[in-house]
Length: 200
Ligand SMILES: [Zn+2]
Ligand SMILES: [Zn+2]
Image 1 (cartoon, rainbow, N blue to C red):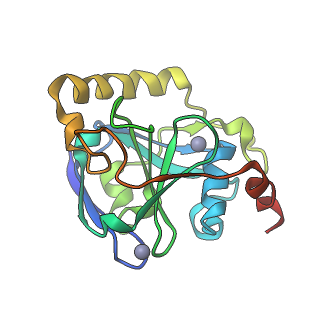
Image 2 (tube, rainbow, N blue to C red; image 1 turned 135 degrees about the vertical axis):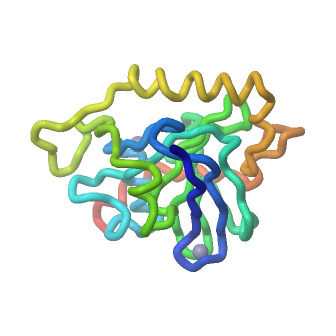
């Protein structure tokens, strides 16, 4: 079963919809990687977004399912490393939204569920399928329910190919389909900036 799920930043400026989503249309997981954690820390949202082990809940799905209604001009992007992972947030209230790659293709979308309608997110997306990179959790997790990169790839690679072959990758509101560039100019978080996060 799939349903529409509303997304919004905390102050309500940036709003949108994830169309026809559910447990079979994507993969929900909790990511314990230090890049996710430091991204949430840069936003100052660790206290209300991360779980007790520094995990960040995400839902990976097709880019064509995302529609933005208001506030797209408030979206900003950060790069935590020199890798292409591009992290999107609402600059009005520092709500984390999406992780994508640097350009429209290949079309990859991971939604930070902190931006999803809290009253419906569990009912619509179902529980997380597992914990990714649980070995990076802080403090460590005993007996983690790990989800492997192989299992995730079996989910997102077919979705990504579907968005490429169908041309649906052009529907992503986060990129200009002509230039394939993101609608918000990227900023790289410096190693020095990251180094201060643990002290905050
Ligand atoms: Zn906001
Ligand atoms: Zn992560």
